[in-house]
Image 1: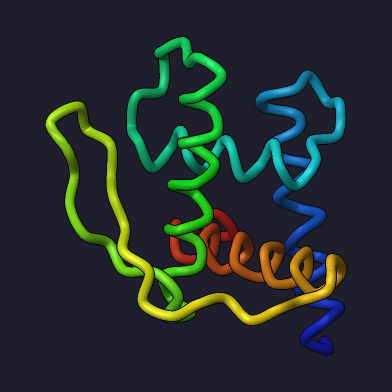
Image 2 (image 1 turned 180 degrees about the horizontal axis):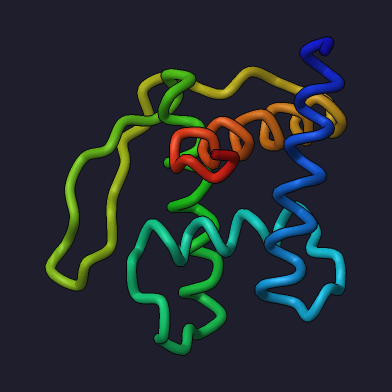
Amino acid sequence: MARDEELKVKWDTIVTNLSNKFADGEILELDSIIYLIGVQELGQLHRKFKKDDKVNLMHIAICRLLAPYGYYEFDFVDKDGWPHYTIKEELPSLKAGEQTVLMKEAIVNYFTEKDFFS
């Protein structure tokens, strides 16, 4: 299977499974999946979050997802349990479609690392 085709199959599997589990089958978009990863990384699964917290959760997820690519590095967890990252390398200028592909690939890698597909 070609790399792009494998990415699409795995992405579709993630979307389907998460949509069924968290959105009663309504298809989750990329931002929603990034948010869920942020909640997972924070580890405070049953907490209600304020709007500012939701933005911070997405930031945590993006940092975590792009850390294996060398863009961010985990730094520390603060007294409230929030992980913090430092920027290691500036993200390259990418077109919207390229950003989407990078994030989908990073999410597939994240779920692969978590044994989601086994």
